[in-house]
Image (tube, rainbow, N blue to C red):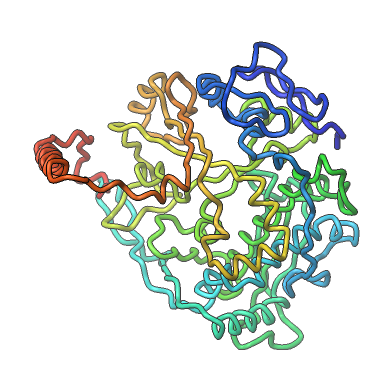
Length: 487
């Protein structure tokens, strides 16, 4: 692990980035004047400069908006000490050093498990009845039929209060004997090596684990050993200039464990990993981990590792890391909704064919995870505030984002001819990116009421004209044939 606070960044519209005097240094050009205060000596940029950098988040931009550190102060590791019964040392098949390396992340994950505000999803997963959902598949001739071999189910949120929290804690006490954690190498992880995987295995317990579990299967969660490589050097602490980065790694590991815990609960309850996971509420995809992230955190968490930043992380650490911040997106996003065939309101699954609706431009927005949010979660007083204010305080705020088109003019022709998944195409190109800045105070401001009868009459005329225009406007969406499966 390098001791440099700020790695050299990719050359671009905002200039190279280097570690000098504890701040980002602009290596070419002149900082544009701005009325906005610049945190900790960071240079200021014009809106035009910022938009030019939106082909990918750059280190100066991430730091300017508060995704890398805290303006005017250093990060602290917080005072979370308690570890949940599921995450005790006895459930981990690892060395003492490995357990110590991830202890802060386990304390953070435990805070979620202890807090009733964050536990309603798990209670519903365990106790809510499963309702059958039609599993519609396409036929070779373009029609549709209901599959018989793999039934689908869904569940909904249940009322949750103190009595339900007691029931959930009783389930966790039974679950502690039915789950094992271990750290595994990359070859055992499919796809992204910076992740975890959970599978079920046959299990003959020495004694019946509890009335909610049949005792026939338990879950084994394999966590990437790369977390140990990143967090191991900081198990006993970190210098002030690296604490924000370490807190981000703790946060992404805690989220990863809780994400996989959703899969583990379903496997233990169902007795197998072969049965399809249930849909939650009206979500269009059945993936319990992401459903938990969306419901509790307000989106799916990802690390910022785009363009030159990704190659930096690999060159410096040999792996991906959260050194350049985190972002989140709404799950399931707008792209799966537009691309996925529907039968009524029910979607086809990931392994079914996808059809690209090319008649309209697709957009997606990623929002930065603010460092202040991650720092607050490391303290017990913030969890007391969460218990007082409710689940919205636990959700990440959509403040600074990047909105981009899924395909641009250069790839539109390929999209029209191939019929593949639009997510496979890049989003580069002029005009593809937009900066999104949300001001929560402005969103709460009420619209001014008309002060005179003349203003009120003018408002009524505009509304009538607008509604008539909507009725007369032709539908410009692409017309899809009856056999396509679109609603």
